[in-house]
Length: 422
Image 1: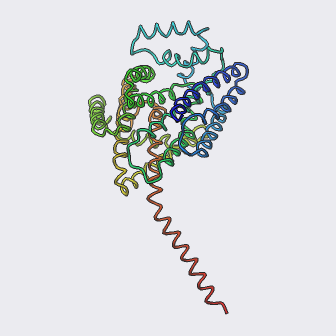
Image 2: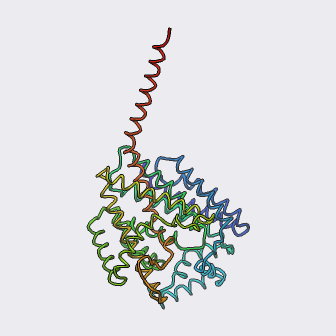
Image 3: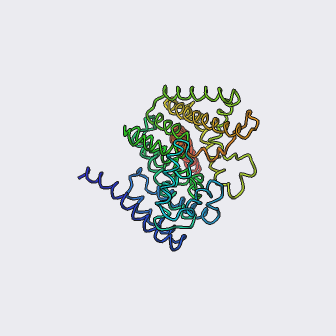
């Protein structure tokens, strides 16, 4: 009976998700705002059908905050704010039906191979969503991206539940999983990126899915996912293997990957590039930069607060690393993965700078790295949750001492009061 339940639950979740998406799409074709509201209402039962850590209040609170944030961004942000977003949506207007788009996409793939643009590749996912019921409003992408975000949170939880091989404090496993899922739901970066017509959340999901397939030794599916992910981002293999090596605990392989990445950076971008890689690894936590006044504007405020939280997590991690030796393996491996990813971004930025015939030096990044950090954002939140549960353990004895002292003071005061009684 338990086996049947385990098998039936994912199937029910998939069927329900498909029906909820169809219902929302049908209403979206009539009224975009009502369709978005219906979709989020229908997501609540889907949340219950999926397997989560035993922290229902925390999960539903995180989901509620995410929904509220989505409506704020829907009202205040243009989903076509950049050139990439406008080009993705242009395909919706350019093709009257799916058949003509698929013919165009296939032609681009066969002509260009691995050099194919991300526009037709990403279109293979969102065009069926738009053309299935003839949607015309770019704001409808919120529904598509929000479903992907739910899968990102669930995939992160699945990786942590089944493959996290690092020491956790006693009785803290559920708290670790719950806080990781909650933080991903309320992440301002994910709220923002799922509200615009962009491929970034899809790239995150494919990286996590690729790592999970590789861990489960589903090699054929892994290759298929990696090929598609590479069509969206050329360096998808870097963060996909980064997640795999982290959850497999392969320190030596990760270190070898880092050495190769650093060597490539020094070869092409010189010592300046290597220094920039180190700076960028820290900037992954510290972005958007809270020291820039422009990042305190209303449009960027929440993501700046997220950067402050991540910066605090990094400082707290240094304390935990020093006080709890059993955590050091996780921190070393996580930082190796992050520096390797930073090296990749430095190479991407260097190519951009050189192609524009600009000068390259220390501090030159060459691209929008605030956006490019999204593929490793789940890792940053795993890093943060791991740090917080360990920090809670390390500060617990201090809190207990203070409680005992306060109790002692209360007892002493009571004794003094009695001594003055007639």
